[in-house]
Amino acid sequence: MVSRSGRTFVAAVVASILLSSLGWGPGAAAATTDEPEVAGALESYGELSAAVFPVGAGETQRVVYRTLRTADRWGESSGSVFLPEGAPPAGGWPVISYAHGTLGSADQCAPSSTGFGPGEIEPIERWLEEGYAVVATDYSGLGTDGVLAYLDGHAAGANAVDIVRAAHELYGSVLSPRWMVAGLSEGGHAAYFAGHEATTRAPELDFRGSVVVAGPTHMEGLFPLGGPLFPDIGITGLVGYALYVLAGIDDQRSEENIREVLSPQGIEWMEKARTLCAGDLGRHIRAERIQLSSLFSRSVWTPRFHDLFREMMQVPVDGYDRSLRVVQSVSDTTVPVALTWAQLVDMRSRGTQFEYQELSGISHGQTTVASMDQTMEFIDRLMR
Image (cartoon, rainbow, N blue to C red; front, top):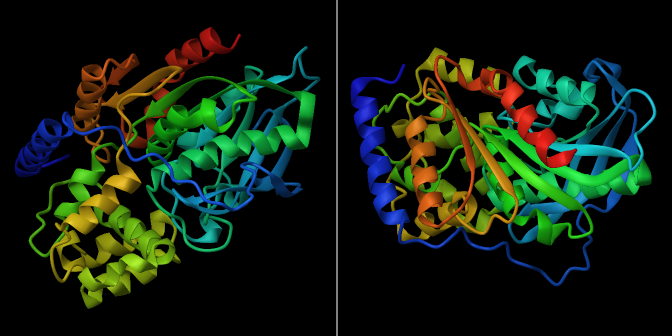
């Protein structure tokens, strides 16, 4: 549970964020480059290992495709494509693009290599049972060259859109142009961005809407508070998440020289984060009682880093042109409900329409499963 002091600190941060963010515009638009890239262009494909097959998958492929590496740099991502058993319906299988939660930054953490954990495989199997094809990006840098650009929202959102285009290139009319995006945690953050940009990024497809489950928001106001005086605010896994963010910046945005604000211990642990999956990293952090404050030699509360975190993490609050569903548990100690409440208030103030389901007594990792019946009703209503 979050301590009383932690809740007070989070509430104060969120209040400050909320008051200031009402005057901000939406997150920075993804930049463009002059490179002749085609989003979602299929580079390679091959059979997945049987160990990662979900129940109910009739055919599976691991794909590698062109997509964004950061908001303005191209790269590639790998991912999984699962088709239901049996013959496709007239018009093809409708598609769910699933964006996974935090698994780590090392290639061995990619779900196309290791499969999905219990809180994420059940929804995938439910969608397959209900007659939906499922595509699941690993995210650029997780299973492909470099380090994952963790919480780099425009890139992750593009990864979730572009794998749908890659799957259509591979399977053609077996897939319907109708599709939606859903994501948990890190994937919820990605689903906000994917839903915001889907119709312009893939105009040839028929995008219907987004499901965001426990997606972190307003992190651009929290991360710049990092420094030697940062208190323990009771957010489970915050040190690990910070290390993945730092590792991604160090790898993909080396011009920012993030190491200049890190302590020797911070650099050491950032290097460890590059090689460890989330469960192992968390166990090491807990065993050695690493605090966020110990990672920094000085505060990152500077205009330069504030702008960087906004560019990477600030979730759009308007401009969604398709349906949006948000799910959050008030018992979540990984993504505190106060952050989601702040996002909902911001979206309402901008006239954004959305559906919201709030749960109680449900942990972060089980939120997707616990809300699945209502999510299926939402998806079926929009896709059938």
